[in-house]
Image (cartoon, rainbow, N blue to C red; front, side):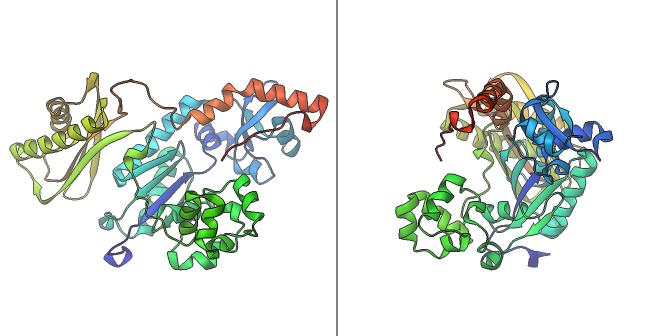
Length: 396
């Protein structure tokens, strides 16, 4: 099995839930499974914008932010549903919790996307075996279809996951970048938007290959430092790790230890939990962070992994508080079998000084609802005075 895993590299998944909002609604109401579904803010009056749509609609030209009226011209029989963001968050958190059981090295990219580093998961099988297991398990547990990109880095994994939807699994190796990616339009490179693509085209950079082959100093003169990073990525180079602490809504600070010998003695386990609590506390102090949700991960000798958490009545940061919570969780859920790995994580950590969280992963979708009246007004103005009455400004 070790042959499937590089000695000095990484194996990274990009996991993307397909047509997530619509898929959740279908999971809740299976009678919709063979019907075109649109999620929009004002289904009663059949106006506003499309927040999401399933593939029966997408395949007929419907896209997110399209005017609902225009979408219904393309798919008049579509079922239109008002967004239920609390429900989508619930599904998202359940799916991400399952993924964290596969590997603790998980980085949430949005409500329906995550990166997973499975380099240390050879015991579970080949990367393709693990991807298939994840895809089938999420479909069985939550009735949500997902696509998975498998690659040696995050950029290529993201590019790969977009290649087969829904329910696709795509492997993209670095040696395949030129053959698979370079003929594609530069706008399809993850991280390059329409505005940047338009700017690049003015310099003769039309395809991803054009960007990859151009002198890096020339790219830097056009795009700045970001251009250097993009030049590396379209050449298959991306050194960014999968970073669990890079998350916003799911911001966490944690540490785990795999032991050379399995642990069975409670006193020894206490000592290891103490070490982990000290490490997590020091990192929290360095970040000036506090948390009131503590999670413990237990992996047994047969590699079965259990994660359990507890929400406390107050914010904590000190190692003694973390240890007290972690021990309570561990000894409540430990089945007595030998322990191979232990982990402690302070979840939903926030800045101690402000106690204010940043806009979370889900806010973009919720903002779509919030600004629905504005977009509806804009739509009315355009219909009365023409599309040129209001122009959109955008900064990349």
